[in-house]
Length: 145
Image (cartoon, rainbow, N blue to C red; front, side, top):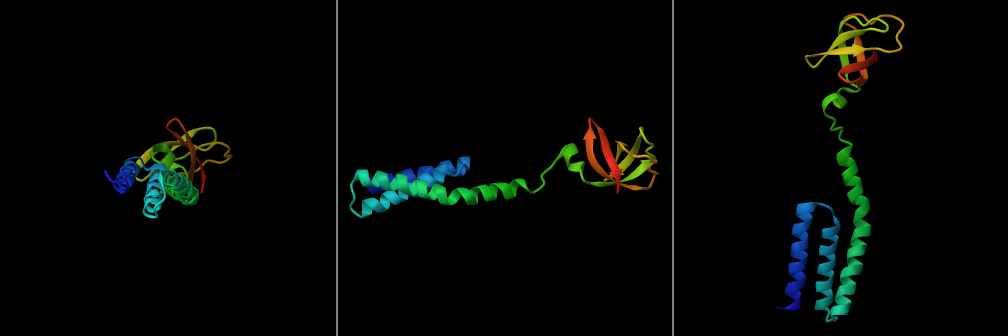
């Protein structure tokens, strides 16, 4: 088998590994393998091909890492909250009055939730708008809007 086909096969396998794992390191090694293929085309021996692969892989990693992290951060900032965490910051309408130190009820998106408003001095009347600030078990903690 020709050396150029070996480098091409290595690069292809690493691209497949990258697609499967999405960890970025295999893509960098694949670029390094293509660099070794270029070194082979320039007539350099195996030692220089390996040096080309290693150095190009490291350069690709150093150049791509900040972009990869930025991309990952942008994906995690999409506010993909689920369950009770998705209710935090939402507005709701009180359906049963909340008295100081007691619980009441509120409606969010058609669901009726038990709520409490710690630290209030006056009742929050039915029909008032509130903001969910957190939760304890299945009881939402709220404040007046």
